[in-house]
Length: 243
Image (cartoon, rainbow, N blue to C red; front, side, top):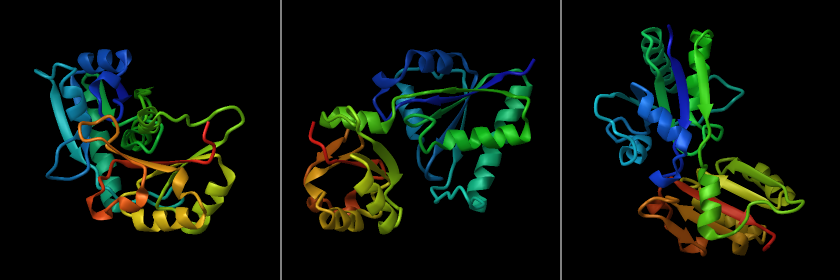
């Protein structure tokens, strides 16, 4: 009998934000496929669950997923595609042996998740395999809670976009939505600060770095940020309404 593949959201950093379902499945799965952003680095997802889930006796397979831009209308970078296929094939071999396999992924699997790409690749290769997506606390929700401001109230509209979009597209979004969450800001911080200043929105922007992690920072003055010191896990919330 085949096992089941679980893509499990493990939240943004604080192990106490793991859901009860995530904990149960991570404890029960014999194999964990864990992603890491750098070949010689560590898996942040694995670090989150280490203090909450006994790992002794489990098979843990760390796979490097290159941090390269993915465009939905274009073929993926060959290195990224190779990582997805490597992970999918590792899963298939365990599933066919009757093992349940978990892929812990940061935040929520539905939001810019490596786990979902792996799951889609898996289903292309072996559409008969049972897959389960387990939601988690997103970095977006954690940032909102950390700074104590809502994302949406009443008739508000919210957009979540990569800060790497061009200025024209970002300007359209900023002028349309009451709340805009900018992800992946670390490499384009200078351009984003300039754009927010031009749009008169700088005073409405708050940056959260490493939300719910040990070295979390909340920055209200975005002009004080040194881009070369900004961590990859950085998010900006721009909220025009103050309530």
